Length: 260
Ligand SMILES: C[S@@+](CC[C@H](N)C(=O)[O-])C[C@H]1O[C@@H](n2cnc3c(N)ncnc32)[C@H](O)[C@@H]1O
Image 1 (cartoon, rainbow, N blue to C red):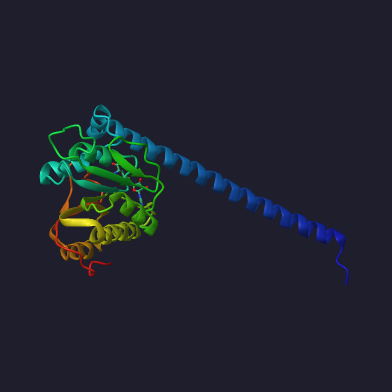
Image 2: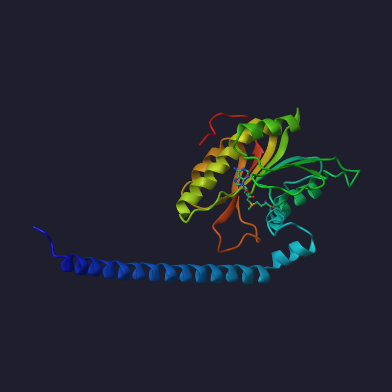
């Protein structure tokens, strides 16, 4: 049986009209979502700018020529616990843009600005570019967790052992807090494993993490190789941030039982 052409045309045009309407609805929806997304982005970047403008540590970093406000987190921990001293060898993991390295260069006298004190050494490692910094050896474009990076560090150190292993490393955050926490704890464990290979007896490890369920597991693993393990939160670390630092002091010896 043949279908009358008037019927097919009206059927097709009815279908096309519905399709057109559906397309219009979808495109309107996409347009609106994009506008909301842009608005959200604008308002959160405005909030960020406003917070930066009011932050006393941002101002102080500008005045004292630190590359970012994070310098004060390390300086405040050092003021309280006296971990950095002239002559020490420091490795700074996740060093870009370089404010912890700047602080460490001054504290360990790696530029030998005070010739009455021993001269230290600072090595900064980051996935990203670290602009050259007098007094620090910088390993840009290096993944701290890669064996190649370990080889590079070993060839710089030669026979020297490390006094302080710092990590302000932060993985690219996802929208899921618990996942971010696991990622950063994974980095802390890689710092802990590294400490077994390079730290001097009595040495210190300081690593950043975002609080969460695996924090106690990290602390317990650190206790197997450090005499004193504690959580520290310097004033410059914002109250509304889940960020804390786990500090292990008094490295005991090499042990293979500190893995994750
Ligand atoms: C908060 S920033 C560090 C700021 C730095 N302490 C300062 O004061 O300038 C965190 C850094 O960790 C780095 N990072 C994250 N994962 C890393 C990895 N696996 N190896 C090396 N660097 C890493 C990031 O590239 C980022 O530059």
